[in-house]
Length: 226
Figure 1 (tube, one colour):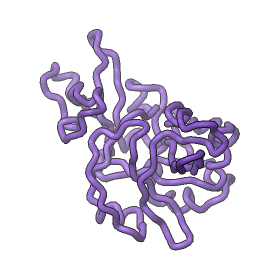
Figure 2 (cartoon, rainbow, N blue to C red):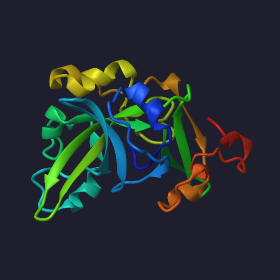
Figure 3 (tube, rainbow, N blue to C red):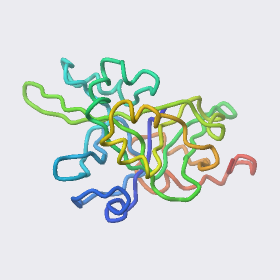
Figure 4 (tube, rainbow, N blue to C red):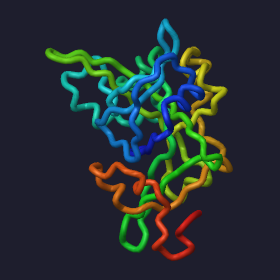
């Protein structure tokens, strides 16, 4: 499951990592939520490009865009066959740049949010799919994030996690065949990730500032970092 994430790395640093040819004026986001616009990297005839797409994939055959709110994630074990995703999985894969993402755990009768990051502190990429939907009066490009079973580090938070691709998998993911990429849909090694509690202000979509990812220190010591 992935329902919120952050992407605050400057565009120039993202371009060095993902090698896209354009350089958009990308604003930092500390609390990206479904149905909002967010950056993805995709392959084009002119090279990789970074584009802002709507989070929540709208299949080309959908009658209206509302289905996108239910398609923010695609399961790795069904993505190749599920009608909403199978076409995009074959020919429209993308990278979703990320600094960290959020999960919640029930603690003392409240849902405590946690920010999950790479131990290296570097930005990374979710495996994503994108689609173009054309309606009577508008065209919407949208995306979904693929999830898999959680690794041992993250299982205390949730049974599932986004598919995090290592840099050497970026090119195969964007350009490879279905047979080549299906093996990439696995959990990132547990030793590479960590998480820390954050303030519940991240629960509200309207809050989009650095405080959403700042470690929350007013809890008992054993809950500050796991």
